[in-house]
Length: 381
Image (tube, rainbow, N blue to C red):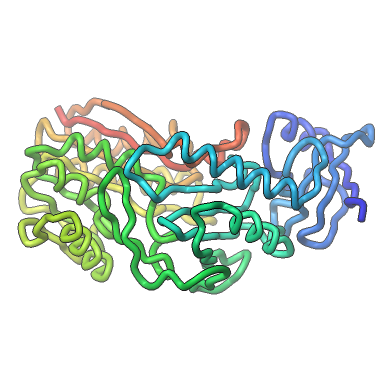
């Protein structure tokens, strides 16, 4: 069957030529059933791209500039992405992102690796009719023993939970390696697909900054930053999170790595209402997204500014603040401005370094929305 042809307006055509992987609803004339393979044409009726027709504000998920058959395209994208990970992810690691949506040519598809388990998450209804093609490509990867699909994307599946699509059930808890550190992942119920894999290199950097320091990890979840700090020789690590079960997992991660959790502290409370008894030498603040779909950019900036003001006063003089944002609403410049405004009330500070997601989270060149993760280390002078 020949793909449906849909004409674009000039703005949408220019965005595609710059490399953007989405066509918004007002950029295309006509429609098609969700999941339909479509060809996109310019004002001269020349084919400029192809993709999958989607529901919602994004009308088309762009798959490339030259028309290709879906089975071969998906297989090629999966295999190339998998080979690339083995080239860029450091040793003593068996967990990373395998497919990062548009950055790997499959916008709306995420696949994470946990040992022999591939966890799939679909962020676009356009992929649902082609799910079996994705599974076929994943099954051919030599390390894949099981494939699990995680639900929880309201616009796509509208439900929570998970489903095993291939191989044996991985069970409730898996132990994986990240730079030689043992981490406990719960693929059926953990955040995202089980762990926040995008913070891998930032966790390692926090470990390098931790020897001899008193460390507080706010919004600590299951203690990823905390275990790196403890293994590096932090004097004491306090992990704070509102979710008590996550903190129990953090304690288990300490035990898995030969660290006595009783030598440190795990505090189940609301971070926004908690203050440390003594100011730490290194404070880690990695909050969940502080903005929502209907939030304005101004409200987003205020949320990060107010949090920075609160935590900045908790850091010891000459101490370090490692902070992050996972919201795509604010670009790096706006986020850094919010942090600077919030810290101004606690005296002079200096930016030391900044980073984003690691190399296994590639972003399409013109897809600024994909550069969501911001991480920075600052020093209170």
